[in-house]
Amino acid sequence: MRPFGTTIFSEMSALAARTGAVNLGQGFPDTDGPAEMLAAAAEALAGGANQYPPLPGIPVLRHAITAHEQRFWGLTRDPDSEVVVTAGATEAIAAAILALCEPGDEVVCFEPYYDSYAASITLAGAIRRPVTLRPGPSGRYEFDEAELRAAFGGRTRLVLLNTPHNPTGKVFTRAELDLIAELCREHDTYAVTDEVYEHLVFESEHVPLASLPGMRERTLRISSAGKTFSCTGWKVGWATGPAPLVSAVQRVKQFLTFVNAGPLQPAVAVALGLPDAYFTGFTAGLRERRDRLVSGLTDAGLAVLPSEGTYFVTADIRPLGGTDGIEFCRELPDRCGVVAVPTQVFYDHQDAGRHLIRFAFCKRLDVIDEAVSRLKKLT
Ligand SMILES: *Cc1c(COP(=O)(O)O)cnc(C)c1O
Image 1 (tube, rainbow, N blue to C red):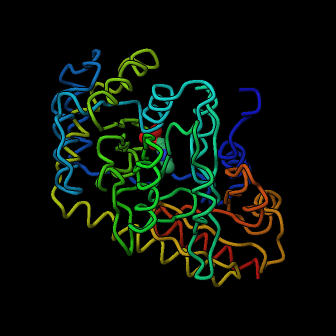
Image 2 (image 1 turned 45 degrees about the horizontal axis):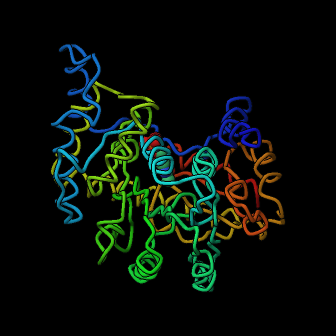
Image 3 (image 1 turned 90 degrees about the vertical axis):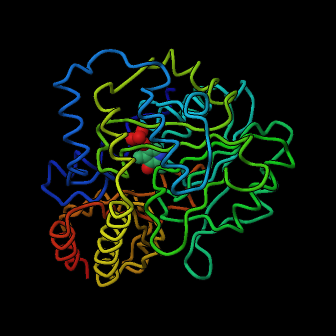
């Protein structure tokens, strides 16, 4: 693990704290989630729900997870054998990879990738086979079909897919997912999907890979309360899938954390059961923030790439004379009092992302407006 130093988020958040810059680096909301959820957590905490919950999670939460999957994505699961609650999506991802991979197995993933992926793949002794997402003619991030086909081979154990995708804001289309599914079936591999932004798609639609033909039986679908309910500090996540895969994840999870977040589990069950209006309002709120930040970044002279979902938007720094995102982000607080993160640190092929930086818009509108007014100093 020696190559895995401190994350870029720690460096950039420390920079924000030291300089008083507006922190659009790390992706955490600056407002609280639904009041019903917070009240349920307080009630559980005061009501004695403070000991170890059952290993797979409390029944009321497992039922809420399956009901939510049915309501939004039409997936039907058994809450007793096809769901496991985890310490955030992060633990579910780590446990899934540790459970499914033997040393030397290969994991196909798309770069830039979420920073825990490389670490979890390394912990399992597995090897990552990154396929690069690059802005195409329309600005949308795309992958090359031949490159994806070439990434699959005899040692491929699983494909690790994040859609909607952090850090690019890409939402994989049905056609792209069809190709990924075809390759999984052809090479008889598993899929592990990270869908923590399932409710943050601004234009198109979110399609779970598990809903495509032949994929349900080979897919572990992972999500989490953190992003959807603005409670990233709670670390309540889950994995759903066929019973043998869920049981394998549970066996690993048992020795990572055993269980977590006892009094928060009933509260997340309440949140998952909120009416559709919560979810549509949440998406609309983030869409407005995205639009506000995108127009500010464009006015500041950056070449903004389309953000179709998530908390994030990426931009090309070359129109402002920048060539290296790390250097650009280190200087940004002094130049204009704003913090962003370079995305090149999320690539194995760093050249592909050298000129790209990421901004988070999961912030109050007044915070975004302040950042936008400071960014004007760049031009
Ligand atoms: C935030 C995030 C996670 C981590 O989720 P937790 O529930 O906080 O562990 C995983 N994947 C992606 C893509 C994320 O952005």
